[in-house]
Length: 533
Image (cartoon, rainbow, N blue to C red; front, top):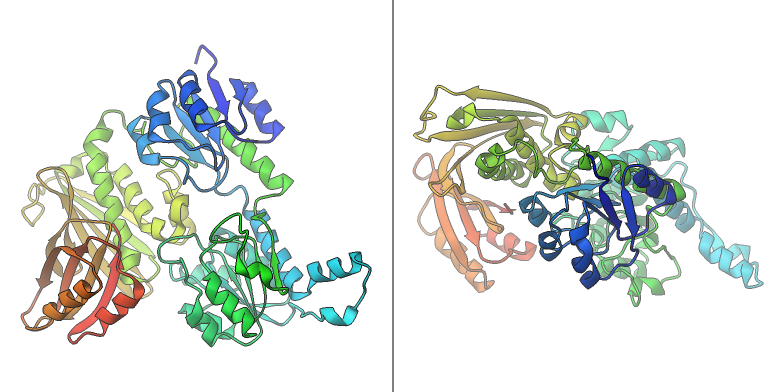
């Protein structure tokens, strides 16, 4: 590279990682750097390494004229404006896999500590007491553990708890059956099925719109009396008020919590319960995890500075040269087509076939297929999915995918200059979606299964299967109005008059679950699915 690059380290990483950086770059350490100071000096640096702070904003990226790489030492990228980074040609990398073992072991530590009342016993003995009879606990052996989310960390937990002699059941609607078998877990079709059988429930899902509050009052009502609960994933996945109520009523015997909806968790009512063991988000706080996080982010940043492709690249600003500008609208379209599947079908994907017809077939479509896989997996895995690891993640989940081109079909059988068609199947479910670009290069979804439509993707949408007859749509719209939800766009696709049809609405604000259920109960409405594109 000639001149050595300059790297700014804005939050603490291990010395070993700093030494790696210093071998190839000039390193400035500014732990706890303020936002104004970062904006003032960022113009001098080729790379920036952060943890959850400082914020990498549009302004920081605009001022970073030399900036090529932002490295996040950790998992999420909430503090980084990834879209702005892409616009400014800045690569964003993170380290989502570095703390998996530590998070798994923290889960089991909290499980044991809460089942055997270890923190409470420790406090009594150190206070001069003894009182062995106060701390009657429960064995893990022979119990049923219910694992919600059988991904990277959930599968590690399953393997280890089988060694404890536990029966392992799991719920993950996005994982093929083969993965359950591989880790010795019995697959449960619904979350409630798992909750009814589990002696211990542990959560290992990303925090998404779908998973926030997924274990709440309804689940605690049907749970075994004396169930134990552990959460080392993300705060808010377990409804904290519902958990407090269940503890108060004796439904939940104990809880082990490493994460909270608001952190620090000062004043959280769960802290009042003696049978709740809490830790301050220590899932990744081990020497080994911190060493891996630090050395991984150092190696990724150095590789990205050399122009190499990094396994955990969150965005893709520098690949394909000038062609990226032509393909960018198709990347957006493909990602939206992928995002549709799990939101509409609620079934694991096992096979994905993508067909490119017309003008787009002559382009570099491989990157578009990656965008589709990224969209397919993001509702399941959250921010952990990127263009570089999407293929590996899909293969790891048993998803087979193929790509086909038809360059000679100039009008794509449907009058479109370019068309992307995706067929996805799994667990008995089959889906077919197609999309194209409008005159202004904005995405349009033109086919949803058997229905031909022209849908503008938006953040808040409803896909409604209903009977095509008079008097169905009016009450539906009125119910939305009563909930103070405004309809921005609406269209209906049908195949045969008087039979099933599909209504797609874009609305100006999110639809809550209570409203969705009310809509689902209206005459002529078969089901209502909330979709975000």
